Every structure is written in structure tokens, then in C-alpha cells.
View 1 (spheres, each protein chain N blue to C red):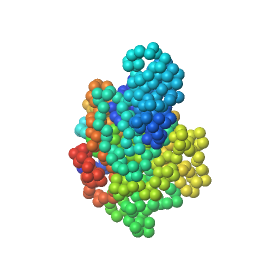
View 2 (cartoon, each protein chain N blue to C red):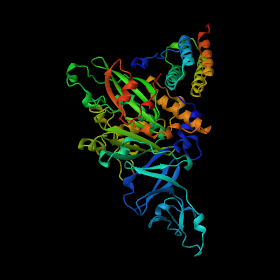
View 3 (cartoon, helix red, strand yellow):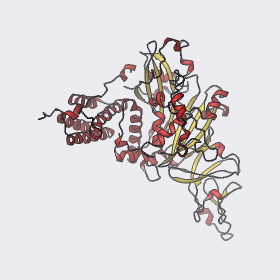
View 4 (cartoon, each protein chain N blue to C red):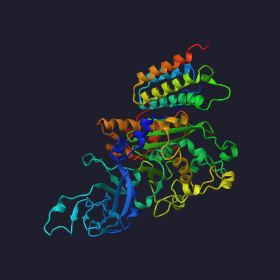
Length: 439
Length: 110
């Protein structure tokens, strides 16, 4: 549980809030590169951390993100003309380049220098990995860009998607690190092997020995190891044959996770950013570190069957959403899937979008031992928020190399140290020292 | 660390010995991992007392056998405060509150 005050502290992210200040110390995903297809194309309005912004790709191909309000009389710049390296307000013709500098005021006197002193607030932007990233904090504190693995790979090695989600960001984030729900919410009733174990890890004779009864992996024990990027949540289950089955979910400050995957398989990153206190935007990227994504992996992304939502291409609102009861099929729920809802992400949405509404009352919840990762995430974020309010900057923002982490799924002998198991699953470039022994 | 370090005690009863045991472990907690584990145990304690108050069974169980509803409300409040102090790394303060909980649960009943 959390006190009402701490819940407010974590869930309020506007410009004057403490959690908003923490978010503003990190590079955050703002929109997909594909939303700004061409230079001088259509500008896009977006809201992040309760700030209304406009994004545009200028004539040079570079992206700018700035206050949506024209500095003049606050007309919305999304209606503007994107031309000759700037966005021109169509109300009185004031024009701003992607740094926010006013470059033209055609109605002012001919020799006026007034425009030189006029700006709109504009933010630093970095475009990589199919995503346009934004830094909304103090310019003097801008961190080096985190070395998320897929951002270092060729374009055919990854696919990035986004979706709008109608709840506070923390409800999504808690769902992302909660590996305990996988065996229930995402269960396929027709496939007893479906306990989220990658097929390549299953012993070939497993279904014949009677041990793969549904739910045999459902009872997990959890522990955490602190890392330079945040922490890794480690969940173990008894595995037939006397080993442990491990699912290790890294939580990367401030709001990123890696969904457990085997080393040889494609990996998936999730990032959530508050739109405002009652809505968020979720980004999901699937990549393979050694090769282009294959057809099956691409289909899993584009079909909406997996952790990428099927969305309206203009609004990014999931096709199955609260207004249509997430297209739940009760017959399917009786016979086929635990929920009767299509897709892994599709199943997550109704759970996260209505936990007592868009901001859950955490002082009334009842956590169990499987919620340890959620408790750890809240503790870590609250500590960072309170430190920042006292003037102590979050150290994670200054550790770009640590963000080159992967999740881990492994079956290992019971005596194997889970921290070592996690380190073994990291790319060779991963900094070994960044994972602290748990004790 | 070994995999079996994860298999720590699980809070399943609201009684004085359980609370005292948690208090002792709390005072020994040093790192992030251990503090999260203790916090998780306090969450479990909170659950036991909160459910006993808000959704009591027809036949009282656990602490509800020996505590009045008013006492349970006081105990819930103490556990909640201890949880908050643990968040703020005031382990001594949290332990003192858990001591108070244990004392109340040990008090002889008439």
C-alpha cells in the first residue's frame, strides 16, 4: 500500500510536481518517427507530462517539439504552415524554427528586431530507434542518451509501436513489471504449454510426462537485485526435473521495462510516459540483437496478438478499448482463453485502465508476496522523487551504458546464483559492475 | 546470493510473535532488497488486519478473536504508519510502532 500523499507524489506529473521533475531528468519517448513521415509534413499535436506540444519535421528533416501555443496570442500551431525550416502560425504569420526561436513577424515594422527576442518553449529532441525522444528538463542537466540496445541496431532489426492508454502511467508500469499475472491473465486454455516459456527452452518430451499441467509455473517467488539502471525483478518457479525456471524483468528508471525473453529470442522493451495524470502513452519495441526480425516476429507485432496493441493508425487508440468492452468474447473465454479478449496487450488494457478508475487508491489495496517488484519500483521511485526535491539528482540518468540491458528467461540448476544468471544473459558490452549482489 | 534466499518467511497470521519477528528483521535490514522484503511483509500484515475490519468473516479468525474492531483499527493505523516510516528509511521509528502492535496483540483479554 501507499499513503494518499505518496500515491499523489508518484502519480502527479505536471510541470510543477515532484514526479514531473523526475521524469524531466530523462530522455523520454515522445512519438514514433513514422508519425512525421516527411520534411515539411503535417505537424502533430501531442501532450506529455500535462504540457501541450506540437511536433514537426522541418525542411532539413530534423524534428522539433515545442509549446503548441504561438507566442503571440496562443493560437494552436498545429494548424500552422510547416515551411522553409520553421512552423508559421496562420493567425498573424509569426514563424518559429525547431529551437523555438521566432524567425519572422511579417506584420511588424520592416526593420523591427522584436522577433529576435521572441521564442516559444522548445525541447531537446533525439531521433533514434524508430522513435522521436524528448528531454524536457533543465538544459544544463541534459543526460547522455541511454544506450538501449535496439537504438544501436539497423532498422530491420526492430519494430516500434505505440498506443494511447486511458489510465495513470503508474498502472501501466506496475503491470509491466508484474510477471505474476502472466500465468493467469494471458493463459491460453487450449494450450497447456502456454506458461510463457519460450518454446526453445521446453524439453521435447515435456508434454508426455504429465508435469506440464496448466499453472505449474504459476506459483512464483520473487526477489530483486539493484542495478545501475534501476533493478531487476527475479521470479523463480519449480521446474520439472529439479531446476528453477527464472523470469527476470529489468526495470529501468524512470518508466521502462524489458519483458522476459530467452537470450536467443527477440527481446521487447516497454516505455510509458504520462500524457496527463489520467492518460498515458505506451511504447513497445521488439528487436533481435543479431539479425533482422523474421516474418513470425513481425507478424506477432503487427497482428496485435502479442504485447503490441492493435491500434487506430491515426489516433493510436486501441481497436479493442473501454468503449466497446475490449471486444470481449464470452464464448471464447469459456473455451479458449482466460479472458476472451484478443492479444496480450489487449488483455492488459482492461486490467490497467480500470483499477478503481484511472488512478487507483493504493492506500486501500492488499498486496501479496508476488507484488515485491511493484513494491520495489515504488520504493525506488519515491526515493528518487524525494531526493530530487532535496536537490539530489537521480544517478541513473548519468549511466547510459547500464541501459544496454536485456531481460532473461532461463532454466537453471537450483544452486545457480540468480544475479550471475542475469549477468550471463546480458550482451558482452553490458557493464558487469552495474549489477550489485542482492546482499 | 543463492536462489533459496528468496524463500523467506511469509506473513500469514496477525499475532504478536509474527509482528515481533518482522520488527527484528526490520532492524537488521540494510539494503534495497531487504527493505523491499520487509515492506512486503508489512503489506501482508496490513492486509490481514484491514480485511478483518472491512470484510470480517462470520466466525472471527486470527487477531479478530481477541481484538475489538476499535483495537483493530488502531493496529491498522500503526502498521500503516510503520510502513510509511520504512519508506522513509526510519527503521527505528517503524520498529517502535511494530512493538506497539505486538504489545496490543499480547494484552490479556477478558
